[in-house]
Image (cartoon, rainbow, N blue to C red):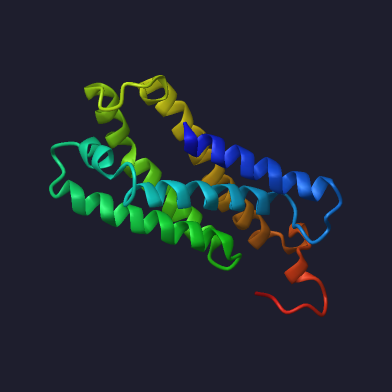
Length: 168
Protein backbone atom coordinates (compact mmCIF):
# COMPACT_ATOMS: atom_id res chain seq x y z
CA UNK A 1 0.00 0.00 0.00
CA UNK A 2 2.93 2.35 0.70
CA UNK A 3 3.94 2.63 -3.00
CA UNK A 4 0.41 3.77 -3.88
CA UNK A 5 0.45 6.36 -1.10
CA UNK A 6 3.86 7.63 -2.25
CA UNK A 7 2.71 7.89 -5.87
CA UNK A 8 -0.47 9.78 -5.01
CA UNK A 9 1.08 12.12 -2.43
CA UNK A 10 4.00 13.12 -4.65
CA UNK A 11 1.74 13.74 -7.66
CA UNK A 12 -0.57 15.85 -5.49
CA UNK A 13 2.31 17.76 -3.89
CA UNK A 14 3.97 18.63 -7.20
CA UNK A 15 0.62 19.50 -8.78
CA UNK A 16 -0.16 21.61 -5.73
CA UNK A 17 3.01 23.62 -6.20
CA UNK A 18 1.98 24.37 -9.76
CA UNK A 19 -1.56 25.27 -8.65
CA UNK A 20 -0.12 27.55 -5.95
CA UNK A 21 1.60 29.58 -8.63
CA UNK A 22 5.09 28.15 -8.59
CA UNK A 23 5.63 28.69 -12.31
CA UNK A 24 8.97 26.92 -12.39
CA UNK A 25 7.13 23.64 -11.82
CA UNK A 26 6.13 22.16 -15.19
CA UNK A 27 2.62 20.98 -16.04
CA UNK A 28 0.94 17.74 -14.84
CA UNK A 29 3.06 15.21 -16.77
CA UNK A 30 6.00 16.32 -14.64
CA UNK A 31 4.00 15.64 -11.47
CA UNK A 32 3.24 12.11 -12.68
CA UNK A 33 6.90 11.56 -13.54
CA UNK A 34 7.90 12.71 -10.03
CA UNK A 35 5.31 10.43 -8.42
CA UNK A 36 6.43 7.44 -10.48
CA UNK A 37 10.07 8.19 -9.68
CA UNK A 38 9.42 8.47 -5.95
CA UNK A 39 7.39 5.27 -5.94
CA UNK A 40 10.07 3.29 -7.78
CA UNK A 41 12.85 4.66 -5.58
CA UNK A 42 10.93 3.35 -2.58
CA UNK A 43 10.15 -0.04 -4.13
CA UNK A 44 13.63 -0.34 -5.64
CA UNK A 45 15.27 0.28 -2.27
CA UNK A 46 12.96 -2.30 -0.70
CA UNK A 47 14.67 -4.90 -2.90
CA UNK A 48 17.83 -4.35 -0.86
CA UNK A 49 16.69 -3.06 2.54
CA UNK A 50 13.71 -4.01 4.67
CA UNK A 51 11.60 -6.26 2.45
CA UNK A 52 14.25 -8.24 0.59
CA UNK A 53 13.38 -11.64 2.11
CA UNK A 54 9.66 -11.13 1.52
CA UNK A 55 10.31 -10.11 -2.09
CA UNK A 56 12.49 -13.18 -2.64
CA UNK A 57 9.67 -15.34 -1.24
CA UNK A 58 7.25 -13.71 -3.71
CA UNK A 59 9.17 -14.97 -6.74
CA UNK A 60 7.24 -17.90 -8.23
CA UNK A 61 9.05 -21.25 -7.83
CA UNK A 62 9.30 -21.71 -11.61
CA UNK A 63 11.75 -18.78 -11.80
CA UNK A 64 15.34 -19.76 -10.93
CA UNK A 65 17.60 -17.71 -8.66
CA UNK A 66 14.95 -15.63 -6.86
CA UNK A 67 17.57 -13.57 -4.97
CA UNK A 68 19.24 -12.60 -8.24
CA UNK A 69 15.86 -11.74 -9.79
CA UNK A 70 15.05 -9.48 -6.84
CA UNK A 71 18.44 -7.79 -7.10
CA UNK A 72 18.13 -7.21 -10.86
CA UNK A 73 14.56 -5.91 -10.61
CA UNK A 74 15.59 -3.60 -7.77
CA UNK A 75 18.39 -2.14 -9.87
CA UNK A 76 16.01 -1.76 -12.83
CA UNK A 77 13.42 0.00 -10.66
CA UNK A 78 16.02 2.45 -9.39
CA UNK A 79 17.34 3.06 -12.91
CA UNK A 80 13.79 3.54 -14.17
CA UNK A 81 13.11 6.05 -11.39
CA UNK A 82 16.12 8.11 -12.46
CA UNK A 83 15.31 7.72 -16.15
CA UNK A 84 11.73 8.86 -15.80
CA UNK A 85 12.87 12.19 -14.33
CA UNK A 86 14.97 13.23 -17.31
CA UNK A 87 12.68 14.34 -20.14
CA UNK A 88 14.85 12.75 -22.85
CA UNK A 89 14.72 9.29 -21.29
CA UNK A 90 11.32 9.56 -19.57
CA UNK A 91 9.24 7.78 -22.24
CA UNK A 92 11.75 4.95 -22.56
CA UNK A 93 12.10 4.56 -18.80
CA UNK A 94 8.32 4.64 -18.36
CA UNK A 95 7.91 2.02 -21.10
CA UNK A 96 10.51 -0.18 -19.40
CA UNK A 97 8.81 0.24 -16.03
CA UNK A 98 5.47 -0.61 -17.65
CA UNK A 99 6.88 -3.84 -19.05
CA UNK A 100 8.46 -4.65 -15.71
CA UNK A 101 5.16 -4.11 -13.87
CA UNK A 102 3.48 -6.51 -16.27
CA UNK A 103 6.31 -9.03 -15.97
CA UNK A 104 6.31 -8.91 -12.17
CA UNK A 105 2.56 -9.33 -11.81
CA UNK A 106 2.82 -13.13 -11.54
CA UNK A 107 4.87 -12.58 -8.37
CA UNK A 108 1.96 -10.59 -6.93
CA UNK A 109 -0.44 -13.40 -7.82
CA UNK A 110 1.90 -15.97 -6.27
CA UNK A 111 2.29 -13.90 -3.09
CA UNK A 112 -1.47 -13.43 -2.74
CA UNK A 113 -2.14 -17.11 -3.47
CA UNK A 114 0.42 -18.30 -0.90
CA UNK A 115 -0.46 -15.67 1.71
CA UNK A 116 3.15 -14.52 1.87
CA UNK A 117 2.06 -11.23 3.39
CA UNK A 118 -1.29 -11.53 5.14
CA UNK A 119 -2.25 -7.82 5.24
CA UNK A 120 -5.37 -6.67 3.36
CA UNK A 121 -3.37 -4.69 0.81
CA UNK A 122 -1.53 -7.86 -0.17
CA UNK A 123 -4.66 -9.82 -1.16
CA UNK A 124 -5.07 -10.37 -4.89
CA UNK A 125 -7.80 -7.79 -5.56
CA UNK A 126 -6.07 -4.85 -3.82
CA UNK A 127 -2.72 -5.84 -5.39
CA UNK A 128 -4.34 -5.98 -8.82
CA UNK A 129 -6.06 -2.61 -8.39
CA UNK A 130 -2.81 -1.00 -7.23
CA UNK A 131 -0.98 -2.56 -10.17
CA UNK A 132 -3.55 -1.01 -12.52
CA UNK A 133 -2.93 2.43 -10.97
CA UNK A 134 0.85 1.97 -11.32
CA UNK A 135 0.42 0.88 -14.94
CA UNK A 136 -1.86 3.85 -15.62
CA UNK A 137 0.82 6.20 -14.30
CA UNK A 138 3.64 4.74 -16.39
CA UNK A 139 1.48 4.41 -19.51
CA UNK A 140 0.34 8.02 -19.08
CA UNK A 141 3.96 9.13 -19.36
CA UNK A 142 4.53 7.05 -22.50
CA UNK A 143 1.33 8.29 -24.14
CA UNK A 144 2.07 11.91 -23.25
CA UNK A 145 5.46 11.75 -24.93
CA UNK A 146 4.11 9.87 -27.95
CA UNK A 147 1.45 12.55 -28.47
CA UNK A 148 3.94 15.36 -27.98
CA UNK A 149 6.25 13.78 -30.54
CA UNK A 150 3.44 13.65 -33.13
CA UNK A 151 2.16 17.16 -32.39
CA UNK A 152 4.96 19.55 -31.37
CA UNK A 153 2.41 22.34 -30.81
CA UNK A 154 0.88 20.33 -27.94
CA UNK A 155 4.14 20.16 -26.00
CA UNK A 156 3.88 21.96 -22.69
CA UNK A 157 6.22 24.83 -22.06
CA UNK A 158 8.54 23.72 -19.29
CA UNK A 159 11.27 25.79 -17.70
CA UNK A 160 13.86 23.98 -19.82
CA UNK A 161 11.84 24.57 -23.02
CA UNK A 162 11.50 28.35 -22.64
CA UNK A 163 13.33 30.41 -25.25
CA UNK A 164 16.84 31.23 -24.20
CA UNK A 165 16.99 28.46 -21.61
CA UNK A 166 19.20 25.47 -22.43
CA UNK A 167 17.44 22.10 -22.34
CA UNK A 168 18.63 19.55 -19.80
